[in-house]
Length: 283
Image (tube, rainbow, N blue to C red; front, side, top):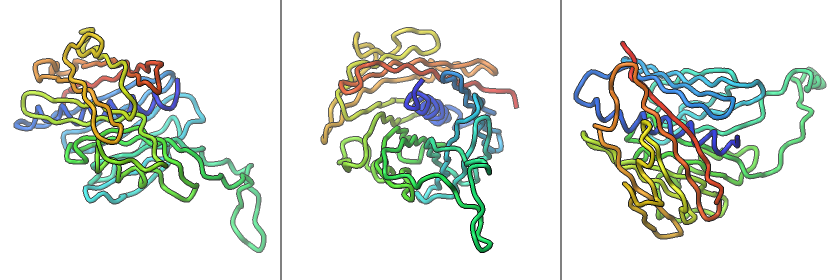
């Protein structure tokens, strides 16, 4: 399974958690558990009643993610690189997390001693500018309207693809996109106490978008027109909106809410499928 599918799945998972949190706005916050599977890799996010958040990624060795924790002012709080399997505590004040796949830190046998007492020097060549994947998602709905995004950014090794993408996230669908940014998938949400309207967007016409929600096939389906509103915006943006009511969410302790979405555009006609789920856990 591709990095695209893996990143979308993880982003969509936390997006659902952020949107559904509105339903508990007038009551005590529950403990929320969430898990997503993408091929041999699983990702899990746990949020305690006190607000402590831990991200854990499991799967075959050799995969690494650079994680950027972003505060409410849009500035980076910190960054870390997590190998698989591994986990990271989410720093206090984080409202958004960006992921991008990176080479794992090289083992000592790939480094050589420097001269004159200098530290170890890498024997790897300095990478040239290239297209780098970045996946961005919210932990707080106040962050860019809950936007999630997978993009590819052309940048050098010393540049941050996360920082380059941030201006596009702030502007949202319909805005101009610089030539060094390719939007592969974008989604945001507007919520109320009775439900959430989800908007998915891409910069190619969307030719397939169907959602199975809690085993209800065709819950939202572009082909049949059920629970979808397609649209188009300026600067070659295309959208599909669908609605999830509070009554469609199972808030029973321990019960899983699951979704499966197929999504394809004219430029990416092979539909990609990803799954996600979350549950409310006993405190």
